[in-house]
Image (cartoon, rainbow, N blue to C red):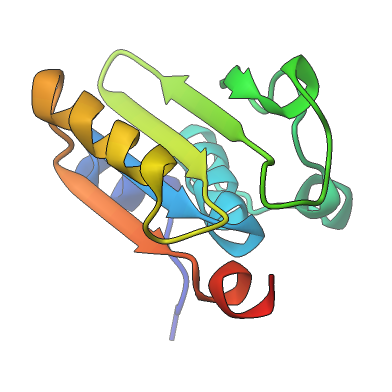
Length: 130
């Protein structure tokens, strides 16, 4: 019995959807897995899993933070990534707090602009350890 998603299924489920992933490194890996899966039947390799803040990953773009800013491990770290194809739009926001002035600004951007169809959010690890 097959227990993992295939490219065709991911493309169909997310067709013409704006998906936003917010959270820490675990959510960044989920975003990258989805970006990769939308393009081919493959998941992250270990080096891809460990990488952060790169200018581009599998045809996505670094919009803010990461290598464009300060590469730190502190609560001030930012990383915003976006992947766009003809029928898919995905965005990732690195969060160090589940609710903060930064999170409020993200929500305000959604209120004023394009509304996500799907939001995946989690930031527990950062919230309880820093």
